[in-house]
Length: 312
Ligand SMILES: Nc1nc(=O)c2c([nH]1)NC[C@@H]1CN(c3ccc(C(=O)N[C@@H](CCC(=O)O)C(=O)O)cc3)C=[N+]21
Picture 1: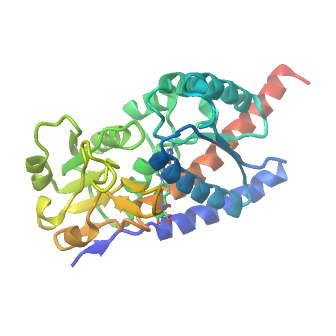
Picture 2: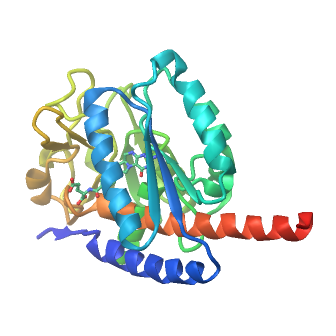
Picture 3: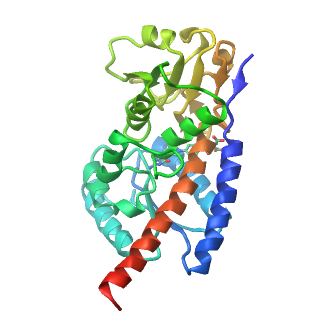
């Protein structure tokens, strides 16, 4: 029998925790404010990302924070990076903005590196600036650090459901900057044996079949992508494996979700499995809230100490 790894509890606890901190911050005159940048113009991505952004915005508002969303898809592609950099510059400087999130993925013509270099590290809710990434390579503290939301959310699910990664064979499918890559690094820190598979991997099945833990973070469901489609089905994993499904896309025509993991067939083989709805997504949102509170403290602290250092 499969045990479902659900994110509701983490999400509920994070909201409670965040609400408490919003109250505490209120007393010193600070309100968390998240600025979200949405740069994509591809219809599948725009539909999907808008949905994610509205969910995160709802969470932040529900705990007493504020949200500003900036959509840049109407800016011509050749000016998109420049406009985003200009916007980031002003958001970096604004005292009322305490967290900035650049929704991923970005369109291919946008200079991603330039954006994350520009983003003020103390406001980096996703831990995607070069500074945050560097920290991941040495060590991290799941309970204290601003860490990439989805990888950290998955590690929290593992902790909650007693999944030990030490010494385990873990396969991560997908090597994206947002999930696959940081997660692989974190799992390595936790002494797992990590294999990362991606679009150019010669073979996938043999690696997947022998893995104790499979994490699928691709986001190319066959229903929506002809090139390099990916779906994990029950026949691909070993009996008793732990399986985590991360990727999912919304069909802009129907509003329907398509996911990386075929929940039904995998549930017949896996010992533990995240549900496509109510699993990793909620664990991710829990971390977004926690990260925003942490960046808010960082920003508030920086403002106070610069006042002390710089004088009035
Ligand atoms: N810079 C950046 N940071 C992110 O954190 C980020 C991103 N880019 N790009 C896209 C992914 C995806 N993501 C999700 C958030 C919430 C759900 C979620 O809450 N899903 C609901 C269902 C969704 C629904 O009800 O429509 C659930 O799992 O129950 C899922 C996925 C954040 N992402």
